[in-house]
Length: 181
Image (cartoon, rainbow, N blue to C red; front, side):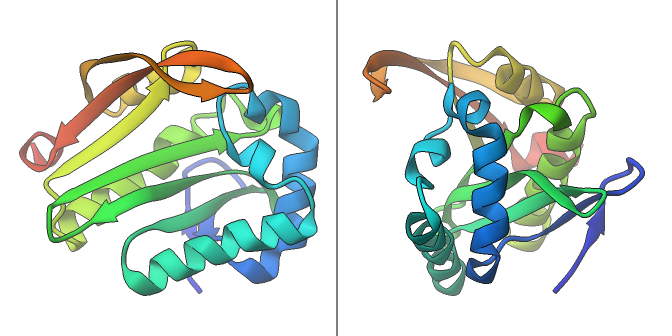
């Protein structure tokens, strides 16, 4: 297993695996309402079994080379994460996502963790386009996309249903030549 320091005292990026389901579930319980405002993980990890299934799904994606999930730990406590929700290396496209519990916000953790992930998927895996899909109502996530140097490609109006409400979806992206310059 690897551990990547994130530049803030005690902040680390580590793989998140099925054997950590109890820790992930406890993290979701702490931040469920905050995370669930915009992120479906909060509703998918509703108990220990569904949490283990969610993490196993990402372990399967890692084995198939189609996705990855990583946790952000602060002082050895899981407080959030980043993921490659979609990773299509043959097509040169990946989608990055993130989440944090409330106590971890405002520290730059998601921006730094996302930089590590984007750098890896572009430089090591040869992906050409990295996307960031976000509800138009999720201002903090949009701010991260901007800090990452992404461009807003457009808005898919009334694109998805989240907790019974239709949401607009913004598409942000960065291309490999832009990232590397």
